[in-house]
Structure formats: C-alpha cells, structure tokens
Image (tube, rainbow, N blue to C red):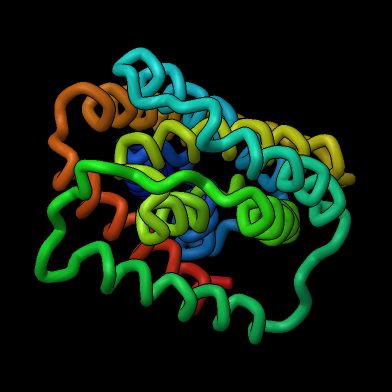
Amino acid sequence: MEIDISIALSLYLVGFLYASVGHGGASGYIAVLSIFSIPVTTYKPLILILNILVAGMGFFQFRKAGYFRWKLCRIFLITSVPAAFIGSKYSLEGNIYHYLLGLALILPIVKLVGINPKESETTKTVKVLPALLIGTLLGGLSGMLNIGGGIFLSPVLILLGWANVKEAAAASALFIVLNSFSGLLGSSAALLITPSAINWFIMAAAGGITGAYWGASRFQHVTVRYLLSAVLAIASVKLLFFM
C-alpha cells in the first residue's frame, strides 16, 4: 500500500512537471516505474495512452493561451509521425544508445539555464529541410523509446531560435500526441490494465491537468524555461541510470 501511494504521488509530480512545459511525461513515468522495480514493458501501451492524454491537456491549455503556431510544428510532423510508427516496431538493444541520448540532453540543459535566460523578442523562420530531417530522427527515436519525442523537440526549437519556451511547449504537445498515437498503432505490445495501474495513472492525469493550466496561464516564460531544464535533467538521469 505504501509503495502504491509513493508511486501515485511520484506520477502526479511527474505529470504536473511535464505538462507545465507541454510534455506528456512518458520518459518520467518510465523512470518512476523503473525506480520502483515495476516492469515497464507491461505498461508500455498505457504509458503512451497517458502520454496522449496529458500532452493533449497541455496542447489545449497552451493553444487556449495563444501560444500555438501551426506553421511552427507542421513540417516536423510530416516526417515524425510515420517515423514513430516505424520506430515502434523496433527496440533499441544495448545501453549504449540510452547513454548517448542521456548525454545528448546535457547540452540543452546547460544552454537553457545559462547566465542569460532572457527570451529573444523575435524568432527565426523554420528551415524546411532541417526540420524534415529533425522530424524523422525524433519520430524514429520516439517510437523506439516508447515516448512522444517532445523532450527532444522543445530544446531544439528554443536553441535554434524557432520558438520561445511557451510556443515550443504548444508545438511539442501536439508533436507528442500525434507521435504517441502513431507509436501506439505500430506497437504489438498487449494492453494490460490492473487496479494499481488505474490509480497510478489517474494521479498522473490529475497532475497533468494542473500542470498544463499553470504552465500555460500562470508561470512566466523564465519559469517554464527552468522547468523544462528540470524535465530534461529527469529524462537524462532516466536514460543514463534507469534503462
């Protein structure tokens, strides 16, 4: 019982934190289940379903607040959605892939919490070819890692100057919803729902609802920026130590 409560509270916190920056939380849910020695493979489809729900809440809130730009994310989606479907049919073997991905997240963390976190007043136009290539890469990784890919897209949009943090959150939320759905369609894993899982994921969804509202309507841009850094740090630790 105590373990169930601890898992539920942890998932609530992950849902809140990830949704506040437009993410679904899949990498965080996987980390929590891994820490508590829960077999993640058992809940892969549930994690993607929850990812869709929480990221969907985030998309609704950030779009409602006026931060969604269709032109910003549509190019990435052209290649990421089919790539996520294909990637879901393959599993990355060996820890070397996870170590490399975890280490790759360290650079954007350092950049995002740099000495001058002030947002640029203008954003650059998204370049089509790089965006298509990035979409393919992130979509494929999303499918293989059973996540939505927003954990990688957000820092890319910000660091390349294509969006501010809240615009990146809105774009990433839709990116996660569609890639997670595509990965779910491509996955052959069976959907298993247990009473404990229902309680855990209800708590995660509740955290997502709360986090999405605060991230879109209450938190300042710099706050979302630092929250995103925290989310990236969680994902990095998860990839390095809990895969």
